Amino acid sequence: MGKSIASRFENIDIESSVLRAVIINDDELTLEMDFCLEEAHPDYEAPGEGEDCCFHPGLLKFAGISKLSLDRAEQPAEANRRFAIKSFNIEGTKFDMACEWGDIHLQARSIRVLTE
Image 1 (cartoon, one colour):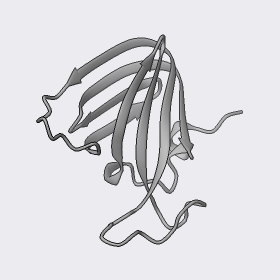
Image 2 (cartoon, helix red, strand yellow):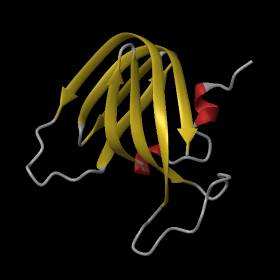
Image 3 (cartoon, rainbow, N blue to C red):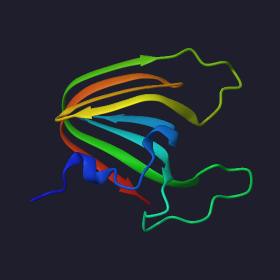
Image 4 (cartoon, rainbow, N blue to C red):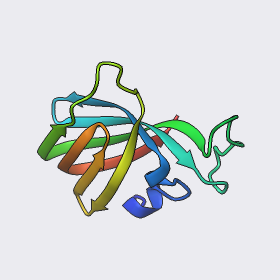
């Protein structure tokens, strides 16, 4: 039996995490993230100088997508490559996130959280 969705985010402060990239491939979507790890996470290290969090690279991988809506926000030419998360919600197979990159809404058969 697999882990519940909520337990996959255990010891990750998702609201303080940031999005780095959105990759679409067939019926899959991958979000490259810098996860803000909490002290109890096995990969936690003391935050770097000038950082509020222990940022650790990772991925949110969605497979078997049946619905997908991306609404890209306009970015200035000197756009930041780390996009703050404004809201984040996973309910069953549905995922919704609003961030500086834009809005992402989808429904997927599989949702995986991977830290590198």
